Image 1: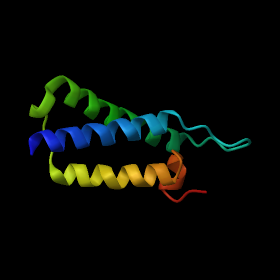
Image 2: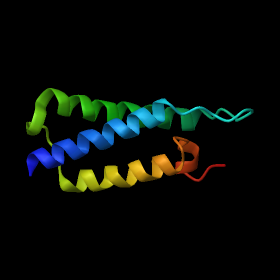
Image 3: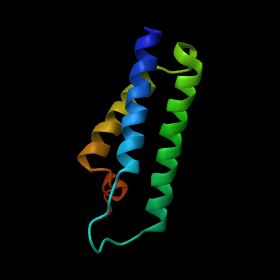
Image 4: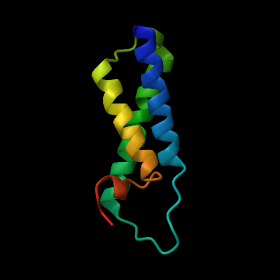
Length: 91
């Protein structure tokens, strides 16, 4: 079970991190510093968690609750096409 949780958490974190890193704003989009900082924190958190799992393997601290939260974040991130402003309802 620990391997499933670690693998699922790793894949979700990597997918979220990559999607946020590859976001390209539309032509003429506004830059909002607060949203940019939030995106940076999400990238750092998901990338850091993925790195921790890679380094510690199945012994990395993960839980089913964390995995469920990451799945929800993953789905919403892909539905928003990586736009963090859309995640928080700012248009």
